[in-house]
Length: 440
Ligand SMILES: [Zn+2]
Image 1: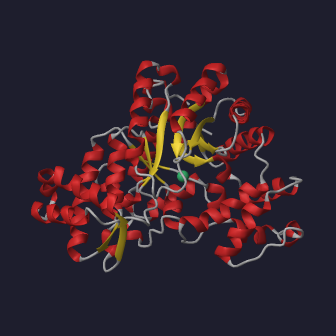
Image 2: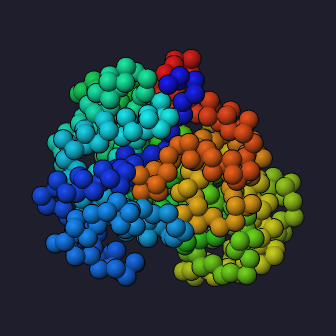
Image 3: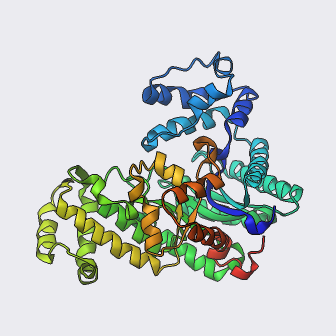
């Protein structure tokens, strides 16, 4: 395929790319699937009990297997996770398998049009240095083999997902050391990701970490890494206002790409009449932010008076949680705030990673007319379109671009996004290579 016609898929989780037929086969060949990870939550969320003894007989037909594996309905993150757990249960996740999967996904994705892919992998928080080293190396070897068999027509890079609740400085230091030690890891490992549950993990906790990465990237470009940050994707515990603030903070504090950022583009009317309960710490930070930037924000439209914001700030000090009714005025306040944040983000280098299927299913964006992508496009924000977990969503990169077009995005704009995405790679954003070196 002519690389000029290819796609860069920059937001993709390696194991979430496993197609049903391949996962079924991997499971069958696995002598000891970790069933307990899958069966219990699946029973709880989908009300279906799984007989692990007859599983491969019961789900022998591809259609039946797809029915329990594919996540292609609207449902909150735990429902998605319950299906992702089938991947965790059936895979061995040892170096041999990781190498095989890395190679195979590069090839499969290439068949579907991807000529550059960044793939995220997440290790158990209990894994050891040696375990992480051998798995990371195995993935790089798989990518190298695939690239060589495809004569360089496709390239893959690795991104390691860190644990939001873990010692991220330690994890980072360890990965940097592995890059020093091994040239293959140095070449293929290009970024760090934060994914999984975001509720309860405000970006302010990662501010110092982001600072450190920026400092290190400047000091040594050859091992520079990006930070890819899932944010504003799931925000069940807070208002759209607070979730939007999180997105802006992540961008301004140095996250290179923002995973989904749905909250910033979602039409707040979707919440009209509802009540949102959020921790007082979030409400406090949001009110404080609104007050600190009141003059600028109110240029974007009708905004609550400073006095009103100040008196609320005073009144919540001793509470733990705040109940917020989404009234008409809350809706317009949120809209104004979103517009303000989008403008500020446009002035950063941050790129939004938008994944249409994922936003539809996990993000539960119900009304296509109010899809965040439309607003991102209208505001000239820099974004890329990606697959997220194409295997489990039953999608591919072309489908995702088609979905974006069906949302109402202009085909010419999408063609521009496709081309520009090759300039949004981790290696370019972290300063490791110059944009003119991006040649596929
Ligand atoms: Zn993701």
